[in-house]
Each structure stands twice: as structure tokens, then as C-alpha cells.
Length: 197
Image (tube, rainbow, N blue to C red; front, side):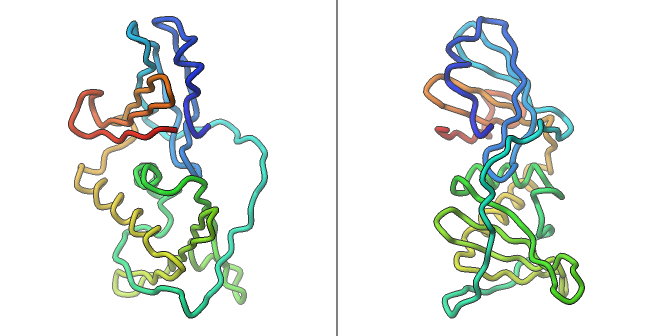
């Protein structure tokens, strides 16, 4: 689910527990164990290892790219062109800043049938393609909006700066009115990310 429903916050008795598969966008997230506190919030930590429930069926929009004169291009030194499965914490941190409904996919080489690039797209039609092959430690980035990939690069840099924390260092506090706060190490610590789901 992309958010913890406010009804759960309102209906949970103090000490009540819920385990939720929180996936903000594009599968970015993990199972989180929450407990209702006496002051009416749900709070807890993400599971140490990534896990998830079977996703519900839904419409699967095609993920397409269309090279055009307006396409941007550059190279990047990002370590992973596929953070959604190689560095899932990075993908989660990126998702906190990405537009809702981002989709991910792969581009396949027509000659070999092997994956050649990762692809991200938004509901508004913006897209970015990142080469899976490296040349001198860099990858090609192209698309209609490379700001999408800069968000991923910034998340990777932040993750590295924080000491490459695993899921067990992250927690979640949910208050009524769809107010979600992800935190690192402690709920009242200095590293927090808040969004209204």
C-alpha cells in the first residue's frame, strides 16, 4: 500500500499492532511493524530484510521512451542503474522525493534480448533511460527529464553519506490526516522525511 490509512490510526487501541507492506511508489518500501502509542499515533521500524506481500492486480501502463530532439543526455557516475532491486533503501529514499506513480522497467537489446537500460517514467509522460553498461565507471543517461534520475543520484549520495544504512535503521511514525514521517535511528532524531500521503 502507498500509505497507512488514517482510519487505522484512529481505530487502533493503544498497544495494538499492525504489519503493513508500505510501498510509496514503484515498489519502493518494505514491511513495517507498527504499534499504536497512547498518544494516538502508529510507530515502528521497518523489517531488517526486505520483504513484501503479493501485490494487488491493477492496470499496468506501458513504460515507453521516445527519442526526440528534446531528449536530454549526459553521463553519470551513479553506482547502480537499477536501485529498485540492487539498492532498495536508495530507491526508498529516492521515492520520498519522486512524483507519485513513477514506473520502472527495462529496455532490451533487440539483437541479444538482454537488458540494456533501465527506464523510469511518470504519469505525466516524463521519462529517463539509464544504460546498464559502464564505460570508465560512468553510465549514459537520456530522456525527457533527467531530473528524475538526479533524484535517484541524490538519494544514493545521501545513503552513502549516512553510512549506507540498512532497513533496520529506518522507522515510521503515522499520525492522523495522512501525516507520515520516516526517520533514521530514532523517531526524534535529526534525520526525518515527512510527507502527506
